[in-house]
View 1 (cartoon, rainbow, N blue to C red):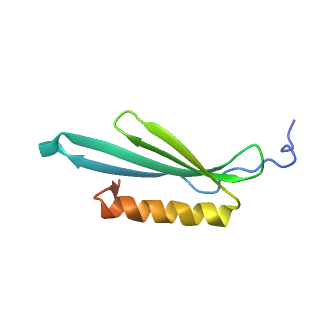
View 2: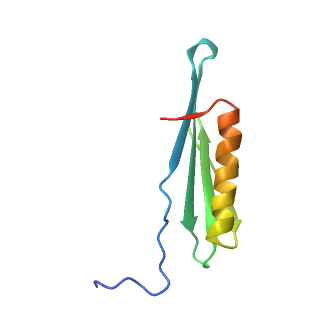
Length: 85
């Protein structure tokens, strides 16, 4: 089957990966943000963080709202010392 399934949408944003490393405090953390569609046509902001990875998904009505949430979350993490690598 070469045609895409009707209604199938792919994420248009590459995942954002942030790190916060401080050997003096034994701190080696990551924060990953991604936007992906769910099965009901809504968009989700998916966040994974920590040392081993906890996962949270926030449902948004459209992709613009999901992008705003992603930018807001990224700014918050960068203010707390996370940097993109």
